Length: 157
Image (cartoon, rainbow, N blue to C red; front, top):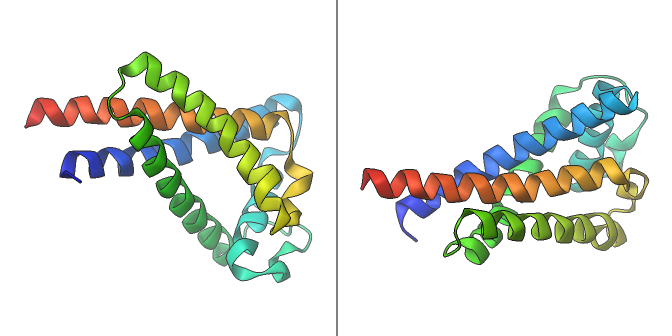
């Protein structure tokens, strides 16, 4: 893999991870939910993938270890998912890549919230429109950032 593609995947994964989180926070807030409480709840759910069920207690606010582990898991999964998406879109122009990114986001929602819940059932309660929108945002943002990073890298070479 060339350095430009590696940079593109890394950049796209970071943009998609951060972007989808912001979309989720905004949608929770618009829905009237306590966005920060939901963020801490989801951090516990995610950290429990690695740390086990012991971190699934009631949300008690910010816990650095839980938030750190959740961030690492989210970034690792974002990197893995974006690498898969990059294979699918590397020859596409921006518009088709965005469409593939949206479909990819829908597939990720299905995999994460219906497939992985066979192993990690504590994610079942977060199924819903806001989580779906965040997964769509992830796929579209990853596709856009990857394609735009690729064009930027090609111009510099």
